[in-house]
Image 1: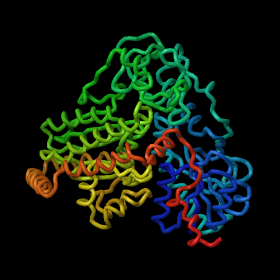
Image 2 (image 1 turned 90 degrees about the vertical axis):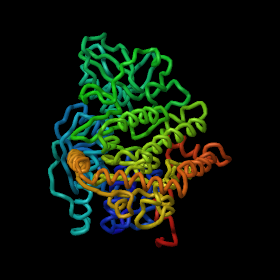
Image 3 (image 1 turned 135 degrees about the vertical axis):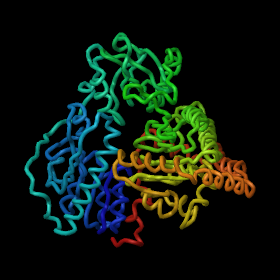
Length: 568
């Protein structure tokens, strides 16, 4: 079928649904929800059989939903209505939640139900739940609804009652407010979790109003005064509760001219630096109440390096810390090293928010790309280890190419890759992609990959040779299978020969063209992006960081805007 996506942005859920539906042979065109007139025009141009709204923040125009079946993806159970569905579910401690695909009508979230899919809730942030449980449930529900529509037509909605859900209004800051003198660690976590991503919890740090994000629990050996900021680790600060403490990784300060979400270490630099440090070694025992964003463990002769950075972004500082952790890992006896990345994101490359907040964004861009290049170089030159990139979560831009520096790339089913830079103001890209990409491709060309601005499924990446194996639907199953496969490799009699072949291949590649030459050529192009006369990268970065809504849908998404292809 011809399906029009109407969405506020082409976010992770919209991308996943796009890939699932196109894999089934449907023709998908995307229109950003900019204005009613634009939406009406898009429908007239594309003449879709069905309209799907993966992510909306306002009503679909009546002129559209009266003439076309419009399916809205709502992150709530049947009967749940309102704009803060997941926020309330987290705050209320719901044990089970769901996704409902319903038909747009005059009353918001109250139309006929086409499909619903339940899931068990985790104690996790809204962003984490959205990227994992909500996305997987939404895929199942949308595919079910599309099949129902294709087989039975516009009148085939499910016959269901009103459901256990109810109308709940937009959750406001008064309902999110933390009482540091009374709220337990669990209560504080739930409040920040329910606001993660957006809008954050309104609070104060060091006497300055701010919004809190990215919280993690910490047990304390002895109680500290509730509400007191008592320490720092990496980029996060530690604040005491009545029965423990929470790490707060990111904040937004409305008092700053550039009010964007930043690591706490940057947002309150002077106050942060004065706090006592709470160090934790890379290889300290994993614990549910001892947060860190980089960790190294060994199991059955295999090393596992985890780097779970917020939203997958890697600042200059984070890259340098990860380099130190990688150097530590490569000095250990384990000859097989698995790079686990993060649960939701393997890596998304350089940290655009930190760059935007810098005194010179051009300089910070340069420092950040150099740091991630240093990291990638260390992986390429790790000839004494078999390195495996195990992609539990999505990856984008430089994060994809950093993964290609590994000897094996394994990905979980459902992982979405964006192996290109062009959407960020025509960036050329580095991370040694001009060396890593061509040597991996088994079909197509490097130019095809880099010029295509659309997301790529893990299955498609495997067809092209970017990924070696794709397996496991769930995150837990993926990690379990990764461990089994990595353990088998570590115990293989053929491992020494694999490493010897790797060393010979690296020497041969270096003799043909040095890594230094690849890097110099890439960085010369990047220098033009950062310091040249064309401001496209700086404009695109600023718009992305400040969530500036686009004035039009990019043409690589809006196929219907090619009027030579579709009739009026």
